[in-house]
Length: 213
Image (cartoon, rainbow, N blue to C red; front, top):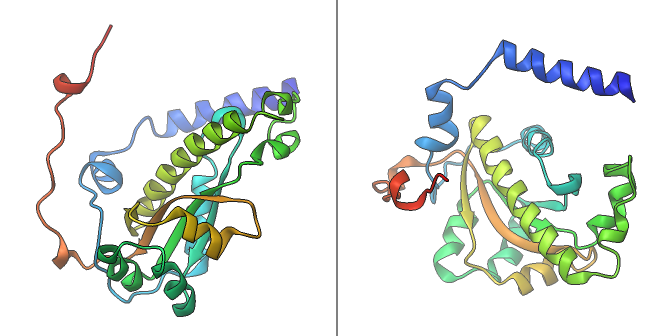
């Protein structure tokens, strides 16, 4: 174990030495100048790119390494029609035109995998028989993972458009009934048609919403 810890620490130090921070253009690409998109070109998103997005997302931190997020990629026309039944009317065209729509979901039974994910100590008693705590933990951390997912997609040159205007109950019944998973939010993925963009909306200044104590 001591050797593994030393190796992990050395890997982080090496990475920080090689690149202390991202350059401004990289930060612009993933967040500062990135936009949520609503219109899409017909350029496809291959499976290998979806796998890369997941592999980057998978590296992001979650509490106790719970990793509760689950991902369902909806691409085929029939599956899109099923998903459309859950959407508010204004979101249907956005979803139908996107090459892929990801259902960002979570597994309330995530804690049963902790012997694999958190092997050095049995943390299952923190969650067993505590459904409300499981729900809160799963929802919070799958939301974090959904954010990592969107940043990862942008880092790989894709565009994204998150959506929450839908019925979770319908999505869960149509796509997740056999898994026990629950939907959190949707995210369209592809290569955007920028002609549909409007000016970027305002953001709060640091002084308006931040406190340093």
